Image: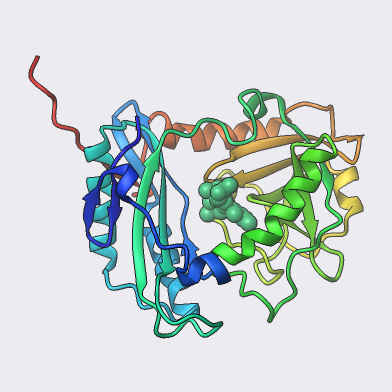
Length: 308
Ligand code: PPE
């Protein structure tokens, strides 16, 4: 079933949620977006870190001088309305703000800012088995953008034309995902996920200054790990640190916490989900599946029970 789309403040049928082919975004990639998940927890449906995602959307808009005419509260309410209207107890949520139809040419200013929220059911991002068994990846020949080219703190549509090159390269080479390096050759992130390494009981992850998207799942995992007594270091890491890691995993809204079992045909650790990965995954799943919420990260979504 194709759910209604929230389009500039009102819900419209899926097939009516369209844009003109001369919209600025189609020609110049001028959009910012979010990816969020709503889970059917044991305590009811809830959106994970909705406010943090919507704040990042507003931040992305600010960087690109796109004035989003809605407050955080209004955007949050729009998300829950879209979900309840769709009657989806669990779903992926895609808010996107883009430059619409207006003056043609590179200058985005003067083109209208359109705000959309869509929801759909989206299963395991890197394959059904991946969460347990892990994925096989390679190091991409495509780098992440250099600092001061595309701002990586903005989750912008245009950034993903680079991510798409890495993803195509990985998939066509028989891998599930590609790990991208920074322009200086340090480990950065996957095409749509942040990266973590485990070595001698310590947890390592590339720093936020390295043209990565500062992921909300990354932040979640860092917090969960530190609370469990692990040392988490954000540091420059060379490519070969991947091969020598005891455990590796990706984090992301779509990917959740997905173990990596090989890189460039090197087996990582024992070639299966490692113990620290599993511990952090369980801690994360206790929140999103069981609905335990000591951090105030879950926004409940109420559904009206229809009379039989
Ligand atoms: N890095 C990139 C480049 C990225 O796209 C994502 C999310 C992350 C890191 C993790 O961020 P967070 O979701 O806040 O933990 N990628 C989204 C889009 C995936 C897609 O194919 O579309 C996502 O996971 O929803």
